[in-house]
Image (cartoon, rainbow, N blue to C red; front, side):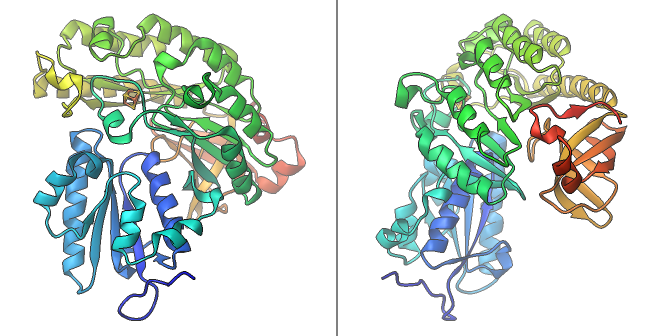
Length: 463
Ligand code: SF4
């Protein structure tokens, strides 16, 4: 029998999460929340209703660490405002720097590394054995990405050694989840109304190498594409060295595979790529991008780039800018390098001055903003599918197949529409990070026609 953990007021203990960082952390928080719910705790959205606040931290770069520490300090103030409250910290940052965090913020009631759920359950007063036996398989790999979207974590860890990244130290070696478990979990969610599955992992294109001794991402996507009711399969974190052109050609041929790839190049100068230990070249990355665009003429490719890596010269930066201008990524994020303890980059000479790195970041983002605005303007008058995520007064807000949740742009539909619906809209006005639109057809009408959302493409001709 499970003993329900009680608060001093004899009601279930209420727990809220504050999740920082990437979607992998969202999956961790949501999975832990389902374990806690199965153990008799009540998970609440609003911290002011909670007895315990769990901060799930990110430690990818210095900015993430600063944000995590600020969030923990705010959580400690939240705790001080009412007797009996507790604050726990978990996640990548505490996995790596737990001792440091404990010394800096002694008011924390518990600090847990990645996957230390048993210790956390015990700290909360639950019986970890009965708690974990109550978890359903259907909730163990997924996190919510919106009203009808989920993140499906297909793998964890990473066996690469990019010189700027401490994730392998924090998350361990690459581990894929078995295909049958992933498909079973996805089927459960699709049966319950999920229309978009977003595949995540520290890097997704090596999926299967550890379990099956070969990459099986295509097979996984093929099986997912057969789930009735699923509209979009979206792939995040394709790792350029493990993404040959053929892989994207094959993925592009799969029904419901969104015309979107997240392909973080990080740099384009051969010299810097080598220093970063990226094990690919600018030429090869261009070939891969070209292959996806040839297979999907409406492709949207997101990338991320890093400036200010040690040894990056003006010439290297010019090469990167030229690459960005040539390739014209539809989406891009950029950030400034910061050394991470235990990585090979931290030992490299020739650091780039902060002012120079900031100037490079600014140049890059100005270029990218122009490219995105031009791309968006080319969509004016076109009809596209939008997945509605929010309704605010007389407007709905959603995403196209070219937009991942939280990181990409959004579309305003000039009428109220229920969140979770797919609609056809015509783009009326373009901005760099937003599109305005008018409704052409809603979900019910789309079901009667042969909708764009049933195909892998997301652009139709203007009607
Ligand atoms: S592929 Fe490179 S950047 Fe990505 S998690 Fe692994 S080491 Fe880090």
